[in-house]
View 1: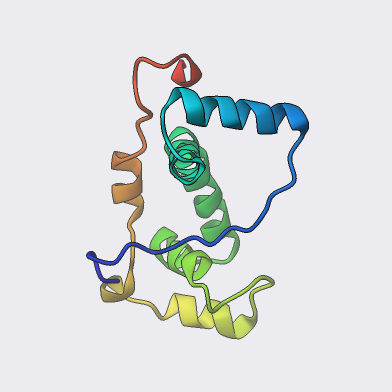
View 2: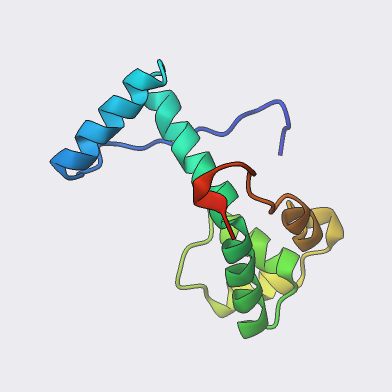
Length: 123
């Protein structure tokens, strides 16, 4: 992956309740930001808040299919491989080496601490 390239996540319209729509508009306006920036902030915040749980889910997947955590992450992150994974996909993942990894469990865990001083992140 090129560190200078920021991937684009294309999202089309999402149906939400009127209340959610209103709150989204309020948050964007109060924060003086565009809806696009607010969407990015909310998605990134979700991953920060729930990272530990996502790490556990990747661990479960890795154990279930006899993969290293890093192999499981790479398989799950590969946009060219889709669920349900085939025996060929699992074989491909098992043959990955350290040079092929995009992320490590250790790196994911070291970044797993949620932001302090917010009510949503209290233990």
